[in-house]
Structure formats: structure tokens, C-alpha cells
Amino acid sequence: MTLLENARQRTVTREMTCVAQNEKVDVDYLLKKIAAGEVVIPANPRHKNLHPMGIGRCLKIKINANIGTSQVDCALERELQKLELCIKHKADAVMDLSTGGKLDDIRTSIIHHSPLPVGTVPIYHVMVENKKIKDVTAAQIFATIEKHGRQGVDFITVHCGVTKRIVPLIEKRVAGVVSRGGSFLAKWIMVNNQENPLFEHFDELLDIAHEYDMTLSLGDGLRPGAIADASDQAQITELQVLGELTERAWARGVQVMIEGPGHVPLNLIQENMELQQKYCHNAPFYVLGPLVTDVAPGYDHITSAIGGALAAFYGAAFLCYVTPAEHLRLPTLEDVKDGIIASRIAAHAADIAKGNQEALSWDLQMSQKRKALDWDGMIGLAMDPEKAKRYRQESGLPESQDACTMCGDLCAMKMIEETL
Ligand code: SF4
Image 1: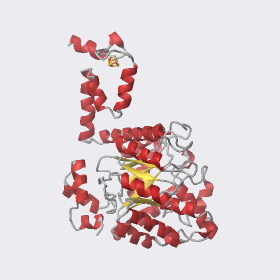
Image 2: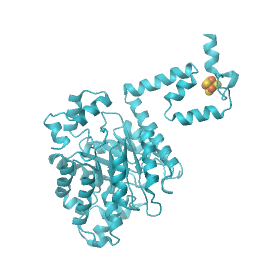
Image 3: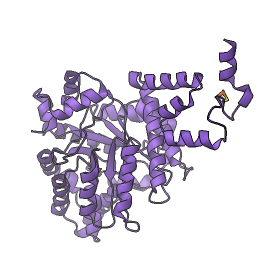
Image 4: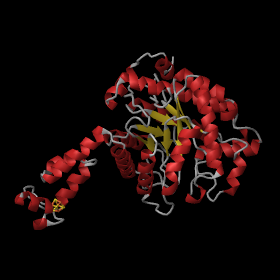
């Protein structure tokens, strides 16, 4: 029985108890939200060392970090180091997006070492193994998905909404298709003049997801990859298809998230979040950014954190990090850390605005330490204590100095404290 089916039967599983404790919510409340499809706990029973985590807009906002090799940079050791960084800097989930090296070995190793839920995009594996798109069969795609389930993958991105009817809409776009999986399937549809197998044989996909209790992350293969394409017909039509598929997955007892944009200007973010809730029946929204401008390569962890904070405030539940390397190269270890921290800031900002008590309390404690000029306390509470400590040390002041080099003797905190 899947986690969703258990929730419907009001059976509390270990995963639910664990998530309820972490989120400090009543387990009955959580059970109802899972049963309604508003919360998912991606947890493949074959992922043995998993520390379960819940995703839903009624819970704290979660973040995902993408790791994985490419065909020109494929060292497993470095990807495992990235995984360590993800754990250390408190990402909530990781996706292995590897396309280079021994994919099965890399994936199983990441799952083995990860207490975080692990997601994959099985179509990448299919793409790597089949150079001729035209010859790829539905059977190959489903065999790969089944293998990922058997290996213990907790959630999979599947671009089921890239359909024959929608593909022609791509031609109107500035940036075409920017999702690797989406472009593969769009091309497959065009060269074979057939329907997307993931859409046409969706029930087969559900059988596999049900067997391994894998959460489906219904991918936005046609997400806008340019501000000029935001909220266009291709994006919104695909979203409507994903909404229909969500109901079919729920009917089969399979948990679902919906993936979202992409590049979206600030003024369209609220509308995007509301449309998703309307079309996809409040299934958790997993957004890839959104990046609020196209013109800052090298700083896209910032463009996406701005969009992610607003998206999460208006209804997204899960933010996929974006690193400074986005659009430029495979992320380094430093890029991964910067991406995680930026995304955590966005998630936390939304948690504060949504009134999460734990988030508010964290900020209050930091403010109190600041007022007390308690530097150790401030560093201990910082989202990135290592960087905060390094900056303080690099200022060259003795440890005993209470003010910092910003104002020195004119320290506002100190002046008022002495006067009071
Ligand atoms: S010196 Fe200025 S910036 Fe530094 S702690 Fe005092 S008020 Fe804050």
C-alpha cells in the first residue's frame, strides 16, 4: 500500500510521524493533508537510510539541490562531495541529474549516501543510452523508470504534459524549450509523429510509481526559459494537462507534485501560483526558480531567490535551487553551496511572511543577539555560520571588540545601549 493509500485509510506510518514531529504539526492534520494530495512525502521504501520530509504549502517551504555529472565532467567523488554539502547546508532534497559516467553506479551511490529524498529525471538516462531519438521506444522509457524505482529513487520528474497538441505552440516562443527532458520528448513527438508515451501510457507509469511508491513530479517540459515567454499558451496549456493527470494519479494512489516555471517577471508570479492551484487541485507546486530576469548570468542564484521567495509566499511549496553557474557551466562545490544558501534564504523569507513560528523565532533570536553585540551568538544563528565568522575575523578587530568595522566608535547599537 502506498503512503497516500495509508493516509486515506487513516493509517499513520513511520514517515508521517517523523514529518509531523519535524514540522511540529498534529499527525491527524498531516494525514488529512496527505490524503487530500496537498502534502507529499517522497519516500521509496527501498531508500533505506531516508530521513522523511514533507512538501506542502501548509508546511515549511522546502528546497531541492540538483547534483550530478555531465558528459564532459563526470567524477562520482565530486558529486558525492556535493551531496555532503547539500546535507551540511541543509537542503531538503537532492536530484541526481547525471548524464555522464556510469549512471546506475552514480545513482545508487547517491541514494546509498543520502538521508535526503533523492529525485531523478529518468528520461535523461534514456537520452544518454539512445543517441537516435527516433528509435527510442515506450518500452525503453518505462524499463528505465522501473529501474530507478527498484534502485530506491523517491521522486521522478516525468514530462507527461508535453503532448502532440501542445508542441506546435513552441514555434511562437523566443527561447523555445529549455527543459532537457521536455526538448527530448518534443523532438521525439515530432520525428515519430506520435503521442508522448508518458502521456499516452500514463496508466503504465502509474503502475510503476505505485509499485515503488515513487512520488511523481509532473515536469514542466515547456516552462518558459525567457521572460518574454512567461505565462504563454504553451506553458499554461501544459499546466492544464498536468492538472488532469494529477487526478488520475491520485485515483491510483500515487503522490504528485507539479513542476513550475522557469523565467517569470515579478508581476506574473502571483498569477502563476494561483493558476497552478486552480488547475492542479492544490497539489504541491515545485518551482524551478522562478528567475525574475534573464540578464544576470553568474548571479542567477539571486534572480531565482527573488522569484522563489515571492512564489513561495503565494503558494509554491518546494523551491529548486539555482546556482551562480546556471546557464554557464556545471556547478562547482562553491556554486552548490551558494545556490543552497540563496534558496534557503528565499524559503525562510516566505516562511516568515506566512507566519511560521519557528522561522519568526529564529529571526527574533538573531535580533536580540545583534542588540547585545553578541558576536558568537550571531555567528551561531547565521544561515551560513562559516561565512559570517570569516567576515568577522577578516575585519581584523580583536575578539574583545564589541562594535564592528562598519561604524566603529559610532556603533549605533552600543551608543543607545550605553545611554539607556
Ligand atoms: S558598528 Fe554599526 S554595523 Fe557594526 S554592530 Fe555596531 S551598529 Fe551594527
